[in-house]
Length: 337
Image (tube, rainbow, N blue to C red; front, top):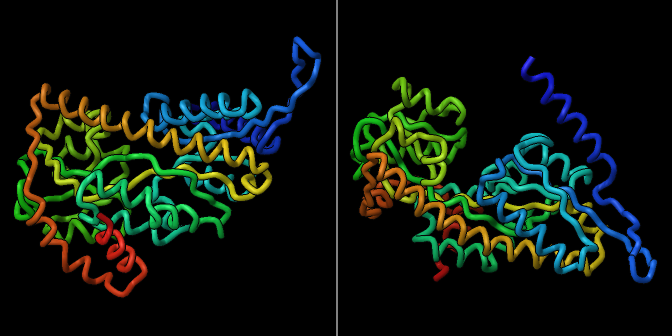
């Protein structure tokens, strides 16, 4: 019975999406009696309203309103009310939804080269990461989905992924030997854990807390805000800031919708999304610092290891990509200052 009413809600909202990607309304100007046209764009995502990405999208909505003097509005549907990430992406491809936020990992099926973000230790640090994403290579990857009607607008920070465990601190790759580590259902993530000596165990994120609690897995990996907000710190008191991967989120717009927009509206959308990206990066850094303070206060031991041993351990895995498209992208990434 619990799934019945949400199903009705999703169905109703999807029906509203079918009423085109923009809505033209006529508003009377109180001074002149003139009428104006307002364009509304629908944006859906799966995150809850407390997430930094949602805050950035709200910021983008405000900036679009300011830049267009009220002529362009962004209607936001959070928390998966219009469907999962794959469902929202499909709606973009069909041109019935204007925008969505997705993990770059979910884009691998449409833009295989985005798999480079999943390679361990591809980026030296946060500064290097953003130099790449803001540069030529980052822009190329945003545009690669256009053949599938998916145009990238900007990246959002999803932080670095780090190990945490229930039983011991992971200081070196040797500590991962024999440990069952939860991973996403990703070929590269599984390869990485194996290369480091651990036992990769794909488990749905919703089942992870209980799996950690019951010893089904010995640890997992994620960014600090997610580690805290999902209360994994309650059962995993050891957190290692090794920063093995940095997998960004991507803001997408339907190419079909984009082509229907005037050059002026395209300019507003581009500017507002870039400003929202900058806004979200700063907010994410703040949330990461807050999360680390809070988990330490709850008794978590936070350890910063020497990455060198980890990097050396995964090098054979990375060497296997030499000569491939992803391997060539990794070389370009490492050449960026």
